[in-house]
Image (cartoon, rainbow over all chains, first blue to last red; front, top):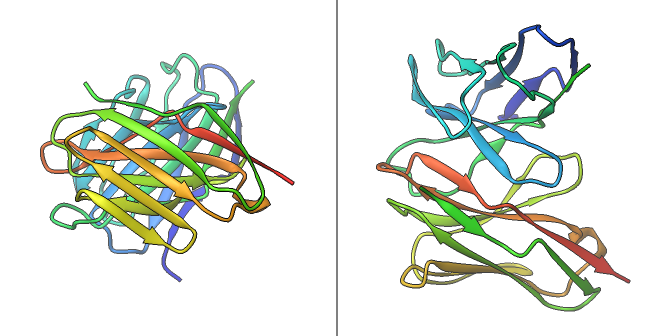
Length: 115
Length: 111
């Protein structure tokens, strides 16, 4: 079945360590997104990519990095520069520009805890 | 900048009807979406309005007024399983590439 797979589902990290969250989709979607969600809050956009080898910063990109070397993959690295990285991270995809749809397809999320 | 407002909490009883409002300020507006999220889960898509008017999907309906920068989600015949957080999200930006989410409304359905 088509969908978005995020891994790991739970991750614990020590302060000062970088960690990479995986996001893979087999929906043949052009656009991919990373959101952060804190408890009781909405989703805030970290980075998005409309096409392979191109990505744009969202509202809270500081302390994060991404790559888009393949259409199917959009990994997110949480660096040691991110001051408060404990959060629920959601990856999403969308068919892309020109498609009149407001539906984002979400993965199950990765919950990162910094010890 | 872009901002969305929703009520933080709504409570209703089983079988009732509830309306969750969303107002927005954004540039390059393409449409308004609604998502449901149960605790610990990922958001799931409910509806999308690109044009003014009412869209109906089963027990859920969504309305948009572009001139008022306003929309709402209407949930009918409430069930206990409808207890969740509901987010409105605008599709915005120069090419509709941005999806900006509201703060969410927590719906509690009581027996």
